[in-house]
Length: 250
Image 1 (cartoon, rainbow, N blue to C red):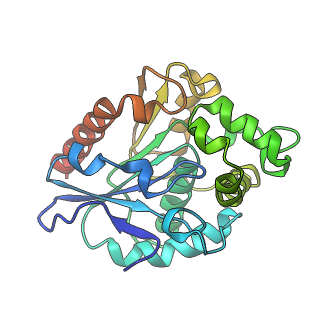
Image 2: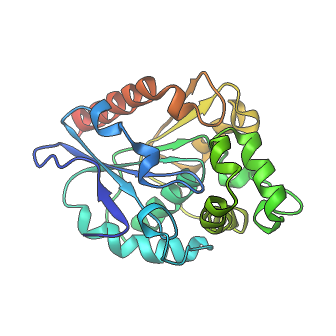
């Protein structure tokens, strides 16, 4: 079994493979139910970075270079059919960087890159002090404000002691990332945003279009940063529709 890449459903006759990249602290469980919500023509896979869920004993990665060094050799053997990338928040940044790396290596390009709940890298600012450097109590307060982690989990010191190292490492991946202009992607890019997601709620997302020559569109959903959960059926319908259109266009 590939520790980094896991099929959410095995569909040998699918037209396309969809690789899903989770938000900070997330893993396979972030995409629970996705296989049932996508057509049989799409085979969904999820990225399981070290330090979370069934990989809690593996040291988490805290630099984008480390993440890419792990993902590139893991994903290339899985590109034996057309593929697309979907990433939410941190996952969108990783998916974009991975698409760039594959393009540089001439190893393939996604039929479409979906970047969700993430401002484009050329516009990103880092809090001062960065979130990943803050004391546990401050970081837990931030997680509580994000409304993504159940209160019962946040209030459990032993459980948080297990979760915080991966969350810190993921935040460090994002906050230490520095945008470096280079050749634009050639694949089409679709940005998803939540109407109540603050800095990622519309206009800033349009600037993802600067990073590709393959076409760009934006779709907004009701909800906050984690609209991908609240609006999951609509999100999956949009993904399936755009993947189908991209496949027909080839």
